[in-house]
Length: 350
Image (cartoon, rainbow, N blue to C red; front, side, top):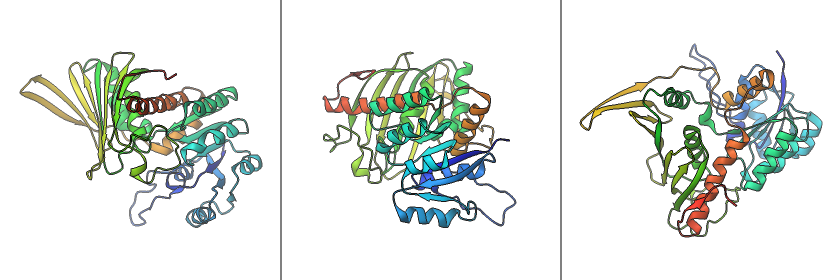
């Protein structure tokens, strides 16, 4: 098997955390929840360098991962790392407003594949630069919207595609927690809405939570304080006729869910479970919980495994840059609709 040299830029939790492992159980390899953990678990990758501008973050990474990568090289300048290490795989896990320049530099360098955290960027111009650089250099660009590698969500979409309960008519997406922030966490829910709709958004109208009339652009250097990123509600009309309702609210109870309403039934899917509901009348419904197949490579590890598979065998990515751009455009249109008095905004944005 080929071995791919990987580097990680940005050593936040999603970039660098290491899962706890139970030493007394006869089961091994907890599902990775970070870029570093995904590379650790994939037999064809070797992390050769990591980069962060904060020395204490580099020190923490060394403490957590030294037993795995004792010869790791540490950098505070990502351009120096890209030049010296000549990586095949590049993970971009920095604040969102920094994604574009790093991705473009990596695509213009040695990288064969890039895994970039969500959202793809903070502006459509930056997203376009990233996509153009990747396509010009024949580099794979995958955006880490995690649920696109979750078996529950694929099982739900395959059921829709099968036609067993008729065509998809509407999607109701709910996000609720103290951190129901449009760009921080809502990006996952907007993206998964597009994942199920399998069409381009045509227009929308929207409203932000109270107190965010000033929020007319996303700068992308926050994400830790809910007071800096609004909850939102929106109606999104897709070109294939699917009508989507996105609603987030900041409350104590955490959770999220998609309700997929088809002609002869509906699906409820979340991070917790997948339920199919069929009705023979207003008074008689049947519910069944679907247990999807287990997979070795899911979430961040699924993203890494997919990149390597496509590098070696060809094919299409499940979360390419252009899908990430679609999600960003919807979120930016939500801001514009609110700014203009909650009016209809046509897509694509000018």
